[in-house]
Image (cartoon, rainbow, N blue to C red; front, side, top):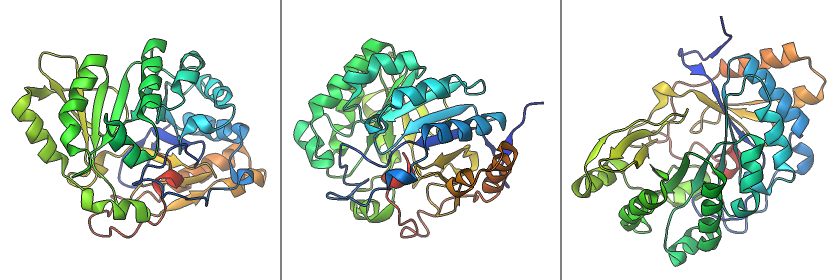
Length: 327
């Protein structure tokens, strides 16, 4: 019988989202405030050896999926070495990457060769001016990175678009056509009240049920499926290969099927994106604990996983920024 991690509500935890840095080369206003400099000290970052050890023990407990996130994971020096190490762990069947794609044109081929086979890329607008308004960055760098990822063989490439009323909600059809053209998967995401940045973006919230209804007037949408451990609910555009996912933490939360935890760059386990429950592993790791003790700490952490987030009931509850938690 394979070991498994089960939380107090019977959910099997088999997915770790691993933040390798809280730094980013973009400044999306809903994620990190402009001018923000309160980053974690490098001495507090888990080393690659520490990360590999934690993920190895997670895999021994039944975790099969690991996603490298940030901040922007490709700003972490020598990230390819970590990818090679994690992909070689016997229990890790699925190693993926979340990225803003600004550096993918440089890293795509080597990343693919390191064992990462699929990526999620953030892209909130196809208009250079709107993209700059949201991210303070340049759209062409992202497009070049996506084309490099496609050429390198990543499959699927999932485009994540945070839909914001009055900012980019008029572009959803354009994004559908873009993804059909390039054989990308598309996922729409609702804005979340994470820290002051997320709450300040709450005026831009739009229910994705509205977006789905609008798309249904232009396209024939049929039920769709995608492999992966994430929370998206998919439809497929009839007559194409495009699958569109809807990630709805606010309008239709998916907490009853949550199978994941997040490990931040400083070794803190967050059991829920919308709660402040956490379990700090770094002090124990640096105190010289054994693997058996580390295994017990992970089990203890999972035992504190809450049943659901409270974004609707307590939108001001989570004070940390998204970049600090890990995407």
